Image 1 (cartoon, rainbow, N blue to C red):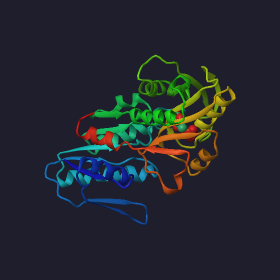
Image 2: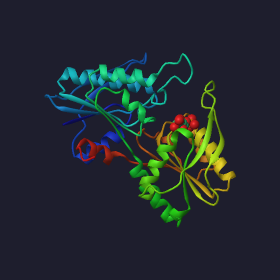
Image 3: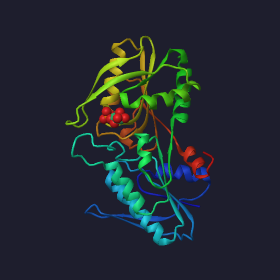
Image 4: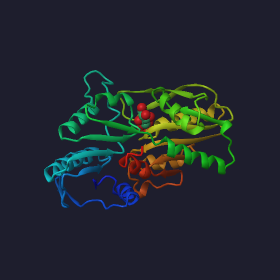
Length: 310
Ligand code: R5P
């Protein structure tokens, strides 16, 4: 078995390799001044099973092209099978025609992944599980909620906050199943209510949404807002403010992918949210390291998946 890493999240790939007690194989990624990229595999591959770790995070298109070129180079060098581990799957939110005449970008990306000869795709907390049905190659969607909920539980325990006073909340209609899945890990049973925020998104304006309603009781509760992605932060901030208006005591975020827009970290730090727990599916830049954000590693989960323990 051989592990390779694209340039998107070398830190995570190195953590996985260290858990597996192997070295990341050598490859050269050249970035040209005109923004083109080139990939060259340096180490020998002898009909090996190859795992390539590459998040298709911002800059999404560059990271995607790198992933495609990596696969081509691996095949030319003699890889038997290539499993693409894409911890953050960019374009997953563009999975249907939200407005008439729009492209369905997620489908296009999947077609490319299949055409380039990838044998299997593994990802974390894909935006919409329905997208799974589009893949005609083996596909695995792993949940990071086991590690995230464990961390949040220990944080709440340290603060003497009882699990009885928790309201698991979805910041929009589309996230109800996600919030419930998180709750199942958090409470270790299925018998709990979910609070749902009704979000209204303006499909004609980028990053604009409003929290227009709330279903469920948050009075005197510690609210855990569960979401897959945070970009502008609008979804979470609006939900948090509405919950506080309705009497919530404090707000914690459980967000898998920190796919931040440039000023998201400043907005989080200034927001009413006490703390956001996230994962390292996307590499955190130094300027994004803020006290209110805590990253939990998914490296062990990836290592277990590679060893087929998960
Ligand atoms: C939407 O359906 C997603 O699950 C997220 O809620 C959304 O993409 C977050 O984006 P933003 O932080 O810009 O509101």
